[in-house]
Image (cartoon, rainbow, N blue to C red; front, side):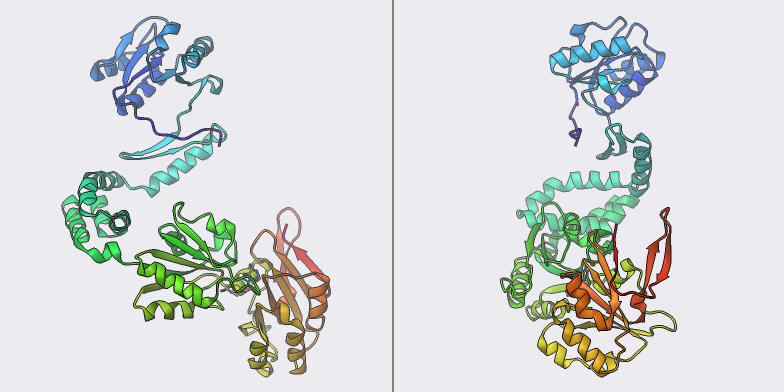
Amino acid sequence: MDYFPAFLDIRNRPCLIVGGGDIALRKARLLSKASATLTIIAPNISGPLSDLAVEKGHRLAKRKFRSSDVLGNWLVVSATGNAAVEASVFKSACSAGIFCNGVDSVANCSYITPAIVDRSPVIVAISSGGAAPVLVRKLRGQIETMLPNGISRLAALARDWRGRVGKHLGDVLARRRFWEAVFEGPSAQLAIAGDITAAEIAMSALLEDSSVQQDGEAWLVGAGPGDPGLLTLRALQIMQTADVIVHDRLVSGQVLDLARRDADLISVGKSPGCTANSQEQINALLVELVSSGKRVCRLKGGDPFIFGRGGEEIAALSKENLKCQVVPGITAAAGCAASAGIPLTHRNVSQSVAFVTAHGKDSIDNLDWASLARDKQTLAFYMSVKRLSDLMNNLIENGRSAATPVAFIEKGATPEQRVIRGTLGQLTLLAEAHRIVAPAILIVGEVAAYGIAEVGDDRYMPVKYTNPDYMITQKG
Ligand code: SAH
């Protein structure tokens, strides 16, 4: 971070503007908006700037700048258009320990002013530290359209209610709940639309509704296979409002970076072979957190209902009569296949897809291998890297051709993704030769020979690997 962002309270504090033209006028207007007390110094001061000074009671001095002029001010702006004067203003301000903005040169700035979207009392400030002014303008435009003018009314209403809410609700958590319900509900819409009376009626009702402030709730949220771009908007919204995020080991760091800053993050990683957090312990933790009034985001890799034990967690919560909702996610098979360019179903090639887990001995024995071995279907095997020889033998013994294409997608939809293709008959060999590690998904079926290849100049083409033996494609 090259600059420290801050909002300054300059109400009734002396600030200095050196310069008397149009830019000085713009700066004087902005500083006046923030209620600074200005001294404006320049041999020539324009009519509009003089008028503003008279209107706001600022001091005017029609003369050249002197070094001692900076003393006693909180901020200095130099807008003279004269490089020598600007440098000398900057030097004087620096030696007096006062922040100075020279509008013509970054070299004469100890602070810079951001682009702003003003919905006072809400103000958004954007800066690229001078690196990309056009980008900053574009972002400002986008933010302008995202923030309706009525946001000002809503924020002002919240300010007026803060004292009352504070007196009524002693508990910090209850207060936060109340404000979240206000900002997500009809009160906010009414205030933005300008109907303050109706907004206040809705807020009074919320203030009296103790369930809004006390009830905990859980959301079982799918985080997708790793790439934060594959999160749903709803998942993001819940991650940004939850009090606690209870997440699996498979949820990527990049996804967790999007969580609310002050949310508690609890990892309940079930590493292979590690029993530190059994499913029962996780269920008990969720029940405890929600019962204590917390809003809990139970964040799971992929989709919570696909080999995610989401059903068991919901059962534990509903047994205790606790509220719970589910937000789907992109499951590993879909996310990884997309990333490798493998169509899970493909006209005339594969008419169905099965999501299968071949995890332990029991699940291997219980699978209907005769039906899984039938042609023209795609199989996506989860959690199966340890059981490859059983898997390969069962499929081949039940009639699936040893020449059927397969693809391992390791760490799919992440920057470390590897795609390794071959045939069913080579399955164990492939895994050994390429040292496949979890998490990896295995796709079996004709579609596993399909992919998308870079053909230069950032152009991509669908391809069919005709001789996929030991074919390896890696993400760049
Ligand atoms: N609920 C998850 C699956 C959990 S089981 C979902 O819907 O995706 C865990 C298994 O998912 C892993 O053993 C692996 O087979 C697969 N998996 C999850 N993330 C993956 C990724 N990024 N790349 C490849 N496989 C992944």
